Image (tube, rainbow, N blue to C red):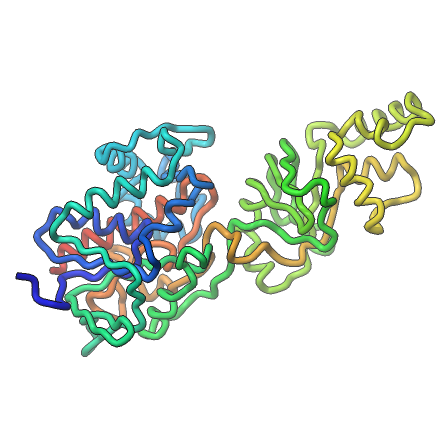
Length: 412
């Protein structure tokens, strides 16, 4: 009979990394308790990838790691549980997968829920695993440099090992509000400052309300300093709205400048709507179209280059003190040098991942165990790891969880 409030392992957080760690340890004869503060497990996992769940990315590992912050420190985790291991694991659970553009792996159904349910199915039928929701952990219990359990409000639960994988601070409505990072900090671990990453950019003037959530394909977005130095740029798709710029390449570039935004450095975002057309050629084309369409209204003129939503944005741009005197110059500037000041980001509620977290100098990345407290392990977004969009962040969660689980079993 199981001793009340005594387990071999307590996992704090029933998200991607917590459920993966429990699944990795389920076949061993140990008592595992998964504690989740929210009313249900896996709330963030169910909405990841816009509800489609980009599980991983099949890029070669050496290239994969270049897309990750602190990639060198990830090597032990990725080698232990690689992107191919993730694919095999979920296929064995009965989740059909498919590869899409950019080496991204999704469930064939297109539903994150299928990934979550597959994990829950193998855990709920296992007599060694208990999952309890509405159970927030308020404190780690330690004794002589070793973790001995956790406090949940007025209740103490004891264990030989504790795995903290409570997520970061993104999508706080799903429970990721930094509680786990605070638990680690209160136990003596230094925290690398946290900030939203993979999130849209707020700009000073924004865009027309008629362009709200408007997808613009095949543009070039550049991030520049006050003197025009280009810090980062990329080509692809963006989304415009009244507050600024989001969409795939905006999120990717944001991750590279998150610390600069957090430090309130003056930055500018420049959109080139016609990156495949050289400026000299476009200038001649504008002059030609203006002669051909003399006397026509601005909508008819601009239809040569833009859809109606962006024509309205062009007119909004003119009223935002950006326009010059000559129509030729205005059109060229809007199409090739559409520049606005970055005044921040879209915040935690829209950010995909947390940049920062538990300082990796306090973690043995060969085992995922704390260097300060024996028996305390970490996995997932709580750590100072993050990656680009495209399956990198879920793979980080799965890999760190699997390595932690492997070494927890060894320590018991």
